[in-house]
Image (cartoon, rainbow, N blue to C red; front, side, top):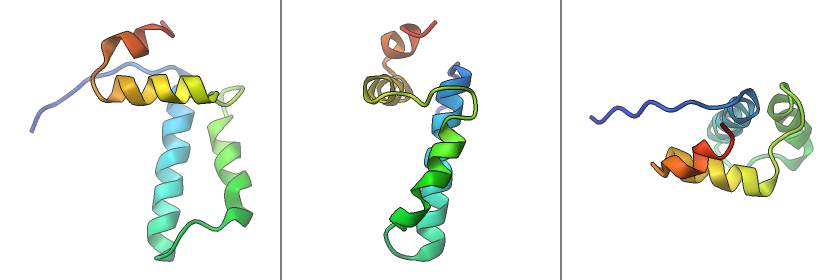
Length: 75
């Protein structure tokens, strides 16, 4: 198993937590996520301020996939 250490901002952390909770809820339901509960994901994702925009989410995904430049933009 390869270990990868990354540094994320508070906003990026909140987005990762929101995504994990989304996935967790999806798995618990056994079917697609209930759109009536989307507001809960937004609450988690904006705990540290404005939620990430689409470009920032794309950069975070790229960084998690090993693109060091993507996470370095926020630093």
